[in-house]
Length: 575
Image (cartoon, rainbow, N blue to C red; front, side, top):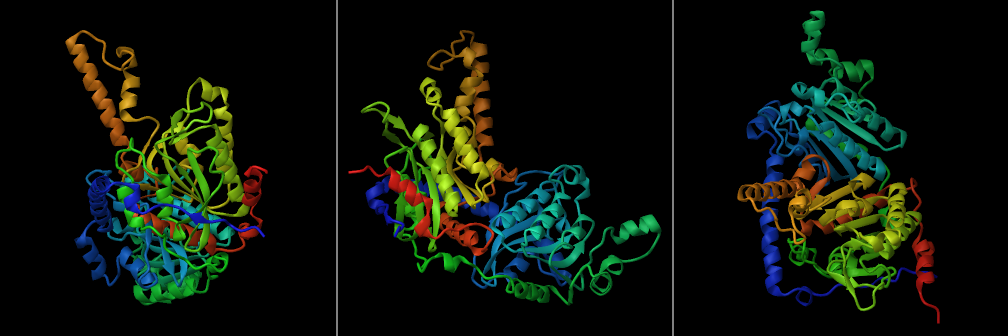
């Protein structure tokens, strides 16, 4: 009978890194984590306490208070899209989190996606990228078949910016297409309407399976002000589309409730009627367990300087249960580690880039840099990706990559073809895939390792992440290449021209370095969330539990009949 041969991986921190280096890395991480905490708090505050008080004065809860009341007591939420629109100005205004809160939340012992209008930011209006953020959360729910809960308190588009929110393929109307796709896939959708629900906001809850309305809620195609202007009728929005209309007359809502607390309690009960999680079944009798080595050590083991290496095995050892791992084909394509471990008792596949120097099998006795994709590593990862998809094993990609090998030999070996094979695998996989950008996410290597364009369910960045085609210094050299000698020194004699070139190179380098900031990536939705290293294990547990919760929509083989066993058997030398 085939079994998964999990083996110990990793070493105690003292055996991995000297105390001085570890302490320095931790101190650097603490500074970055402090910035992350401050910026998270700023987004969570919305437009500030004054606007929260306005919500409370109406007898309502804020969006984040509603989520806190809705989730299982003591459970952790995992926010995505926190920094959408971060640092962007719309006139004199900002839209923290694009005016919407999207989280993975545990409700009635089931993972759900909660989408809540932030009613402290322009009464929950939709800003540029609000609709894209909502759609991204809906897509996560669709891919994992997780129930969706909408907490609606939305006064429609933020009209001064309507030209950037209303039209386009992913404009506000695309939210309703996602509603329909979720419904078509049988994914439960439950909506609570707590206040304004105007125009497009009015359409969002309608396709939901259950709609609850509080006494302060209304759903209208056009609000009272517009009706008054167009038809000279003096009506309130509650008169036009309150619970009296939509629960008792139109049938567009199901249940009328007195207040926020009652609505949230009934939504919790409704989620509790959906199918329970299949994750315990897929543990195959194995209890969840912590790693043997603490995940809190990761921030000290991974240096902030992307040019410095670290032991990739040590990262895995601090993410998987008992620090046990089955590495597959360890002797081939050694720039990559691929294999299987348990997270919370559930099997997950992992792909991670090795760092530093590795042996070069093409040139006896030589070394070559890791964190680059070579022929064997590409073929190994592509085969592993396909096998995990065939076996139903969710995949986690841990990126720290500089790109593909380049040069005459790389082209002769057909890296373009092997890379295309890997891209095909990742483009056609249906198994849940998750990507974590540990540090470098460079060039086509970022694509090949299931970067955002290849539609992982979630892509995380750390505070160290740098997404780019080319580093700032390298691009500055390429930009001014005709003015440089073979050692990349300026070979211009004129002092003024030399000074202009030096200033130009500095400006290019600084601009590119700014573009690589993870907060800029998150602001424009080029990554889903920024996390601390010590949070990664908790995210892995979420990924595992959410991947295995829904049953019957994808093939999940039992571990005895994995095709990975066949591939492993064929790779073992005979005799």
